[in-house]
Amino acid sequence: MDKKIVEFLIRAKKATYAGKGNESEASRPNSHDLEYNEGELKYIDTYLGSGSFAGEEALWLEDIAFWSMNYIGRVLGADFQGDFLKEALLMVPEDMPYRGPEEYTSGSFTYRCEVEGDVAWFKGYEVILKDGIKVYECMFHGGEVKE
Image (tube, rainbow, N blue to C red; front, side):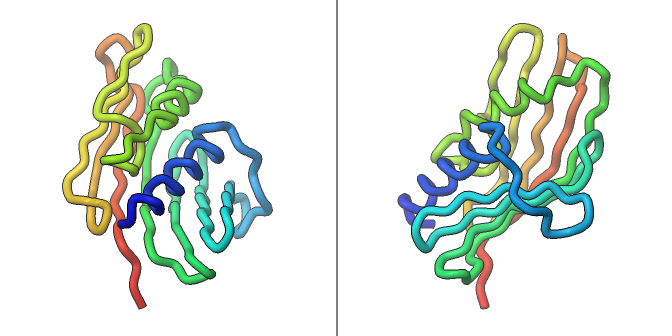
């Protein structure tokens, strides 16, 4: 994927869920939708649920989809803090523009993310540990979309 598109994706992620952006109109019953646009580029993140959740992020150029990522996750412990997850997701790296960095620690929380593949075809897994105990996990996969 072009460097400018990756940079757009990172800006979009930081402006929406991770950045506590405003939700747009729900596209499905009880869905949470977040949208970010720059010119002809569009990013939409839509998800269902919160304690256990599933969703999809996608990119469009001139209303033609060209990249997508699906994810499913769950909260495993009462000590989970959504703000810590968002803090980690704000650090989405340019070489791995899917979720957060490979590892990030703040206080008693540690975020870890493993990815196989590249932006065209990938799968990954992220966890949050509180004092070494897993309190959250999420699997994701995605890549290029072509007609």
